[in-house]
Length: 171
Image 1 (cartoon, one colour):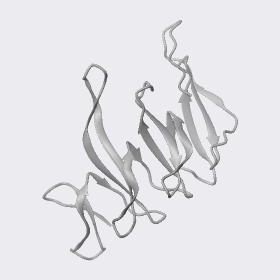
Image 2 (cartoon, rainbow, N blue to C red):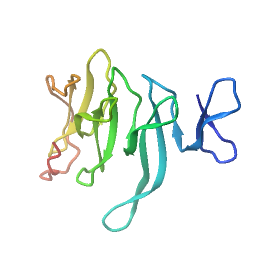
Image 3 (cartoon, helix red, strand yellow):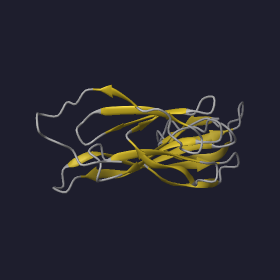
Image 4 (cartoon, rainbow, N blue to C red):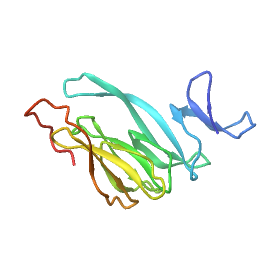
C-alpha cells in the first residue's frame, strides 16, 4: 500500500502491517494497485510558455507493478488507474489552448485511443465519455468504445469566444 514518508513528504510502498519499505519513498504521488498496476508520479519542474512565463508544474507519470518495477515509463503528464484494461493519460501539447490532451493506453503502455480529446472519463461497461472543443469554442461530447470508435456526438456548451473570433482546430 502507498505510504507517505513523514520526513520527505514522498510516497513509497509498504506491505500492510509492516514497517519495511518494499518501494522506497521517491514519488510525489503513489496510488493503490488496480488491475495489477499502480500510478506513480514524480514532479519535474515547471512548464513555461513561449515567453518564459510559468504555466503549471511539470509531472511525469507512469505505472509500477507489485514488485516496484516500472512497467510503463514515467512519460505522461498525468495518468489514472486502469479500468477495464484501459487508462486515461494526459500528454502535454503546446498546440492545445489547454496545453494538454487525453487519450487511453493499454496495460503495455501502448496508445489504444490517441490523445486527441480535451477531457476523458474512465471506462465503465465498455464505454467512456470524451469531450473536445471545436474551432468556434463549442464543446462537444460523445462516448467511445475500447477501440476509440465514437458514438453520436452532441453539443454540450455554447461558445464563449467573442463574435467572429475562432480557435485553431484541435481534432
